[in-house]
Length: 344
Image (cartoon, rainbow, N blue to C red; front, side):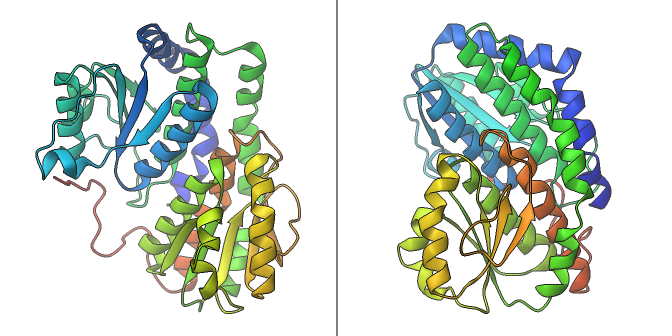
């Protein structure tokens, strides 16, 4: 897991380079020409969080209504939704989940344009789709997905911005900002705050993670990583949902990991942090600046909120790794889990 985490700057560089970037641009141009009226993502597990990020991007940047499919409506209940004029995107590291393949197959039959975003371009999901993107993360050693997750995020970011451009080619200013990501990621991975926090929270009974907008997928992915590597109950909420009831469980014994960026989503978290402060919650902010109401901060670079999820998750992956080791667990062999999860 440590090796996979460390490779992420290299994965960013690879995905931003020559053939891979060109492939994403070509797919984006095809989609832009189709002018889909709706976008539907289908995914499971970690990839579901990448899909959620993609949904935020699509609605905010493209102005296209976007949702996440419930595969069971098709695979268990036999529904056949009318997906004409829609773009259906299957997101999966392995591309091997039978239910996702079936969703894409049914969508294609109903007239949707289909796209697979996967780390295995020869997978069943890729074969079932008209279009495919290879996230180029390379072989992932650990069961807990890390580098494939951020590769999916970057591929979706490049795709959506390419669609927005119309011809798939990223604007020069966008490209300059994206080219900074490998260096920024390397700097984030040099920080040792996550390892220091692992000792602090070694005996925690549960953890809450929260964020709004582009940061919400980060909160959800963090919770999953903590659960699958440390077996630590972790509950993820959007900042807004946290105020509607779950806030009641916040107290000094429940660590709260709050992802707080510089943009509108981060600003919307200020009220959440204030309310957590009233509950005397043990809040750790993840972001570029100190946040009122938080006792500690995991520092991450000040970037556009669209880019922040690619960087904010890095120290949180390291926290999951460090916490698992501090609790005497083996994060490379989570009990009951396999690298490829087949669902139907």
